[in-house]
Image: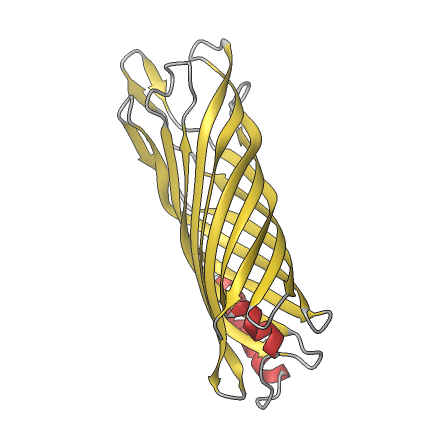
Length: 274
């Protein structure tokens, strides 16, 4: 409820603060109304909140992403602008696993991990007096982690973590030159409707609702009227709520609460179709 109130308040603030006759900067409109491809490098740190022992994973993965978005006036020449966005990202690679067998014996192995994320946004863009654009939005999506730790027999066919996403955010675009725009995005999301599944022991249970925070900082440079290049730094932090212990033959199985932090950078290019 607080997230919805915050998003509504930002929209109302923009509507009051910005004269209705101002239109979006052509440079910002071109950057936002485009299809983009990128390659990225991401570090993941995963920790289970389990005492006195718990699993930890960390390492770098390579990835790629594609996004398509638009920032177009609802009425030509007038604000607010309608903001839309759809993005997909995938990362895959080997990260270090440090954990324990059921009897407490330490275990070091490799997780052949695959991370996926898809997100959709819709919002309103409000041009400001300095040529910048303030864009509050609501968001929804889905994220997943294929966790496949080898050489142990503990995970068998691997584990699959997944969750739906919902929430709100704020994006700010500022032109620093006739061709360069810097952008910042902050999101507060909720993880809901997700869970974990382990096919090797036929274990699958749902998670509760938990928070996720996401930050981005981007620099884009227009190299022609239609084409631009960009670089983005990003940071994501979220929790999985875990599950209650359940008795399987000879032992209990449950998923502990956990904390995941991911950060990295991407570089790419985009084509404007505004």
